[in-house]
Amino acid sequence: MATTKTSIKKAFDTQSDVKNRREHCAPAARALAALGSGPGRQVRIHRNDEFALYTVSELLHETTDSVVRMGPGGRQRLHFDEEFEGVLDTKVVDADLCETKARDAGELIERLEDDGLQTHLIAIAPHGGGIEPHTDEQAERVAERLGPQLASAWRAKGWGPDGGAFERWHITSTDLDPACFPLLSSVMSRGFTHAVAFHGFNDEPGVLIGGTAPAEVKEGLRLAIQQVLPAELKVRVARPDERYGGDDPDNIVNRLAPCAGVQIEQGADPRDGHGIDIANVVADFFRPKTARRLAWLGREIQGVLVSGWEAAQSLVDRLRRRHAA
Image (cartoon, rainbow, N blue to C red):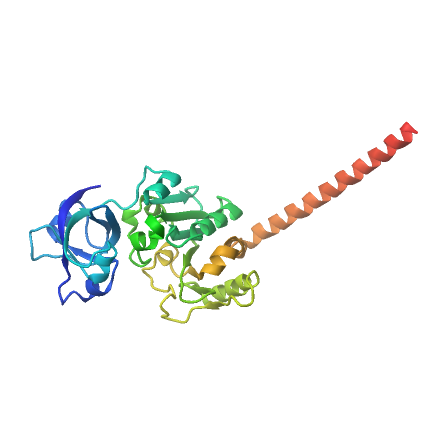
């Protein structure tokens, strides 16, 4: 990872993307290249003790100075409205921290459960930790319930001071560059049959199901999730091109499983009170039919064995009582 001192300047009037996207920035091309980074990557911008993660959406070619331009929303992420002197940093995740130390430091880490082989399903939480709380727990639960031969789980987990994890670390799923997340990069070319992304949002209290998966898959999942939620928490399938529809091919979940990605957006109540129930439903929904049958047979066999053991114990007890008499 590399850093350089930089001047944070206001975006030009012609830079509509940078002006309107609080997560985007435009560094000087020469300064960024010297750090070994490039367009589309994520970088950190520091202002004194404040820092936040940004996506390089365009480059400045007209200057040799170390400059980064961003709009008012971008500067406000660092709690400042004016131009300032700062640091451009190519570090994205901290690979050396355990979760406890990352939480205490307000840092960003990534985690992966993967056997290196399976291609059936990957569950992801790009905004875990304090960014969109409980979504990482849901991805972990899916992998735990299905086991390593049927499911992998990748999570980016970030924290921030005074609950400011979202402001510090959130990067839109269509912008995430796997090159900045080594563990994610390790599974990007796997070619998963299914991928599910757990997210949180505040636009509505219930659950919104999107992605590029076939309509019948999303509708089946909608029905299954609705069964474990109170009636007032509605589950619906996103309309085409809806804001949180998750159907952009560049969305990370759709890159992991082209034409088979599922994005699950959840209000606070579903995540806080029913997050694990939802994860269990997702795991069972994507369990292969043969595996479901084997699981059912296993439960039946276990039931027979338990019944046989109980009957044998009862017989032994009766014989002991007779012998004692």
